[in-house]
Length: 94
Image (tube, rainbow, N blue to C red):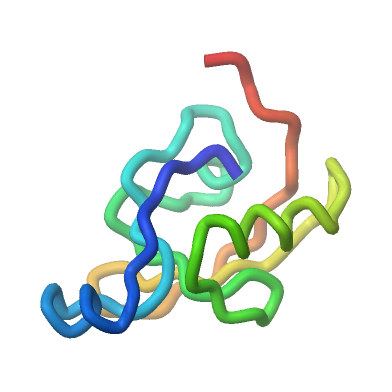
């Protein structure tokens, strides 16, 4: 997806008032997430209808897909849910 993020578990969610998911720290320019409109500070909560709780889980779900597949993800941005449709791409060189 071209993101870095950290898992938000139950404890962090209650302390920081965030939903459980992956807190997006950075979005790589030109990556799938960037082109779909994902932004730093979004919290990724779903990938293709599956609730996301760890980066490892997200990587496994992505690995089951192919380059060029379109997937739907749900993020929380400023407390509001947003659904983004993105195309899985080869990661651009950084």
